[in-house]
Amino acid sequence: MTADKTDFTLLPDLAVRSLGGAVIWANDESFAERENLIRPEESTYQPATFGHKGQVYDGWETRRRRGDFGDSPDSEDCDIAIVRLGVPGVIHGVVVDTAWFKGNYPPEVSVEAIALEGYPSAEEVAGLDGWTTIVARAAVNGDSRNPFPVDSKRRYTHVRLRMFPDGGVARLRVHGIAKPELRWLDSGPFDLAALENGGLVADCSNRFYSHPEQILLPGRARSMGDGWETARRRTRDNDWVRVRLAGEGVLTMAEIDTSYFLFNSPGAAALTGIRADGSEVELLPRTVLRPDTRHRFAIDSDEAVVEVRLDAFPDGGLARLRLFGTLTPAARAELEGELA
Image (cartoon, rainbow, N blue to C red; front, top):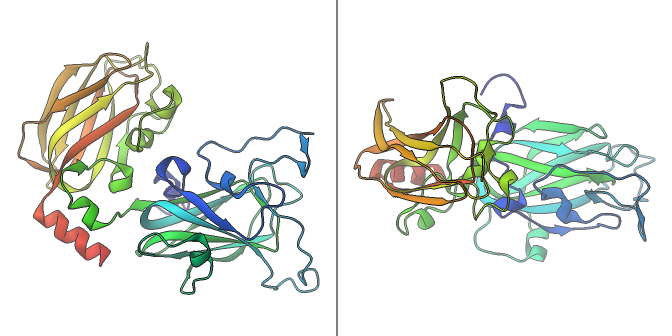
């Protein structure tokens, strides 16, 4: 990671609803619902749109708190929302987005995190001690994306956002790398590319229309906008995306899904595995793709790879990429050490 403190935003949002995140508890949501915090799309606003509770905001907004904040700027009086991450992971940064909140945003925020086992109730989580501060109380600007890098190697399952003393936040983004339970990964062959299993987009040639990490999201794509689409290529080269697997593994099956891409899917694709030493191995030769189709291919290779490059010829859009296989013993041992 470079010195740019917003580089972490290129990592997946572990809290987003489309990855399974949920806002399980808030002490107040008088003006706008807490669930808006983790919606995948950017916040929108329509002026002079009033409901029974006032102007409608696409975010989480609490009532005006009447504590001692006005007399004591250092008061701990605050409103709280708790988010269960869609998948546990190591958090590299948080974005507190106050879009459209101009006269009603919180002056300060903080973020804490905790790692829990099982499925405790929202009330149980809200009453727990043992939270770790990952973003110390800090000032934020209104109608802005406020990024906060996180320097921690610990794995967390929940985050707690505090607003001092009250106000509105449009979106909470929790960027990091997924670290699911090892028991889940040990249950048999699984998708080593999936974000929820620890897969990650390492690089790509083009993200003009959408981010390639969407092809690693769980479930089926819901529209063309729920995949990765590149600009129209006017050279002899081709577009590509490189995926870092959850760990070194041996792949057995691949799914390349062009659902919803009717007139702009790639004409063909190829898969190349990248070993730990940087050398390459062919997993799937250049193969014709059909529009709006889920393609499934057997991979006849026993080579262990850490990354896979998908080449799309010449350009176009993909809905999902699945790479099924098993971890090598060395990769499993490494993950076991990380999760210990």
